[in-house]
Image 1 (spheres, rainbow, N blue to C red):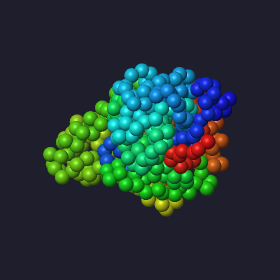
Image 2: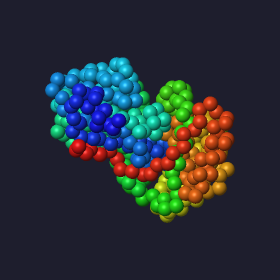
Image 3: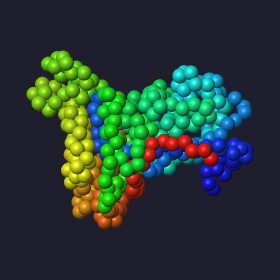
Image 4: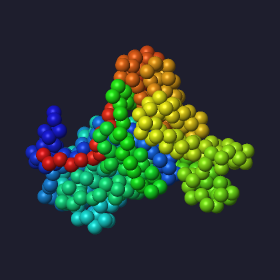
Length: 384
Ligand code: GLA
């Protein structure tokens, strides 16, 4: 059944008035750097979350999720505090924060359908926040600039989903541009769209289908370790504000002084920020060999220094490394499951797929889901 029909069936024959598309994201490089005010280099995926929406007359905002197969209602005047079910808190959160901004929300019916795998490390949550924020704004006859919209969506995630994420996911979701990656400076929140010339190259996503619970507690722990490392570094360098300001030569002498875990966390952040800038240069120069090399190095650093990888991700990257024609591969997103990505010569994609099927799928219970994506536009609203 197509989505319009589904909408009619769910909401008693009323017609949707417009469609919002909010893409998932793949970060090419620059992992766990956003909350340290570093650089990130994500793309908006071609796979997106869709919100079909229309007005309603009953004072309520009704939200149906095709993934969870349930409808949640809340008052347009008062969306209320976080409650159950958890998925609806992203919607409730953006609604509450839009109200707080002085936007008079209008009652409406929203049907949400996600092509972005939920909880799969490609930021279905930012797509949900941005997609529903745009739908609620459109119903209210309002618009919001991309950067304030991204920041509002991120506040919703902090306050309503209890996840202290950085700014990357929401920024790329609103600022994605077809054929381009987004080089985002997470300190100044300024950005540059860099063309990706992938004539004979494909971006392959390899989803482990594994979602390790550990991620939820380890993410804030990494943030704490970064703050601890920063505090120690500041005793010698009072001028630094975040790990963004630390250079390799400043950090090196601390190897013997700092707690080893804290030191390794800092080393990852410092080296990853440097790699992201180098990767941006490689993209500008169209040098995929260098870009790929930086991806391998990023993965090693996330695995060995930041400790956010897992056996499944490591194995996918190891398999990718053995296939000729793969420029580079790495885990993407927060880690502890989710996806790895690979930059692959188009004629080698089949070989990568069969290597994964042969080696990965026979080792783990869940097979890896392998698909391709392209750099696409950020969220859009279209009248139906
Ligand atoms: C998650 C967060 C992002 C970012 C990544 C790691 O996806 O939502 O803000 O910190 O992890 O790079």
